Image (cartoon, rainbow, N blue to C red; front, side):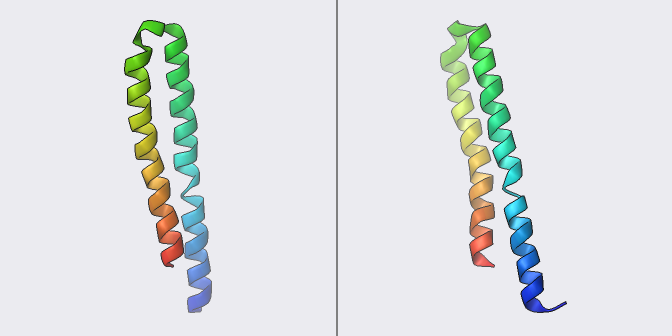
Length: 71
């Protein structure tokens, strides 16, 4: 295998690794909004925790993007 083809395969894998955080953020936000709809009094606490969870999931996607550009 040549170096260029290995580099392109690695870039493809980096792009595919961005799918996981996108799915995680969608599920996290959907479940948080569902919980806020069921218990409106706790929406402040749920919203804060949702923002932290989304930020952590987004950081994984940013790491994959940085790895993509470094290759």
